Image 1: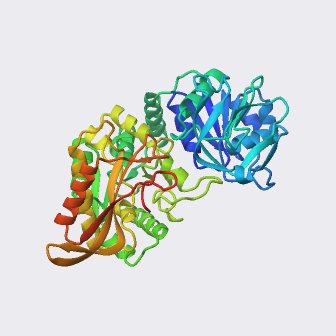
Image 2: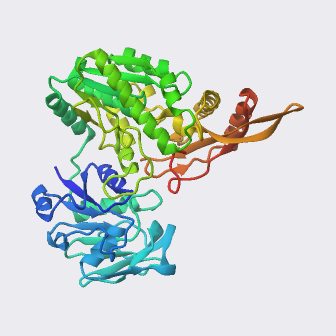
Image 3: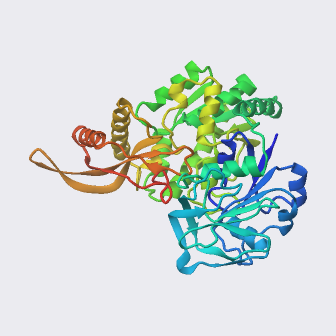
Length: 510
């Protein structure tokens, strides 16, 4: 099987780069820059290497670097952003502070035709995010693209198969980014499209049959797509040795507890144990307003609940979780910056009574998880249901979590989902939900003065959840949702719509 190495230098989009490559049915795997040597790269037989972006300056001695021998291995290399600058620097070029030449966001770029820009028009839009730029080319390299502020927006040494781009082809904001990556993978690296999701399922099932043979497994089931797919995948591997603990922590959407129990347990035949832990969680969260602290509390309580349940079930050897790629990257991996901790990545207590943690979907993006779910025979009503974070509504209640705010939020969120569900969209938003803020404002109902909370509606369109555009919902839908929320829910006086994309925001508010 042909494979591409994504060498991580601390950027936030390393997982997305790998996903773009995998979308072409070519296997890609990520390694931190300081966890693999040139000898190991040669031994693994990679067909190509991609240097990721990163927050550092290559001329800073403390910044991430790599043995320059990598450019002489005979393996094609594509450098992206910091990786582009690092390639030029390693090859003997000069990288300098761009000063007023810094670029952020959508930028028009002009390219020269070559293997990397095959089927890319001379002028198009790319996504820039840099404060440094290549100012002197290394020997043997030529500049093959420029923008209004960056004279060296792309470089290449075609004889050695070395390419660099200052922009980010992996994000959807770059118009021909997918084509550029496709060109590198197939035309430069000569890869074959021989990696399929069926292979992932077969390999995973065989792996866990062997790895977990004779062991009892406890799965942290939230009822969302990720943990549900993980449950069915592991059930196929270990059967009755798997017990799924569904923690009803009081932070679920309206009527969600019953839906999860019926779909996973009765329809799919998986052993589901429902635990009512509402008072336990809300008691721990009382008075807490800081988002990271909320996540840490929820992460710790999840594990403690599982430990308590495991004692009732007898000896449990393994804890399983539905962790996926975005969870890992946004919690900070290697040298990348922490954006937010996820309850099943950054919030785990140090001491646990389980031998190990198993995360069968850790290498997959959300769309890949859904594809696995379909192939496993999981009903569409579950596979394509709205994504829901592990900490539940805790990350959609701003400030202190109270029963009053949770009740208001459940009803508002249900109205939004109901109204969007009625409409026919050319492209339905990939995720939509309500957030209750800590802000109260004056309103009028009839002749009476009211004083209630402000609710935010959020809808995004994305294909990977690493970047997302806010959805242009029709005004008629927004008007109807707003009218229903303020008329039907006592305690909410104002409804607003979030029009921020990711980046700079995240999909969730906390």
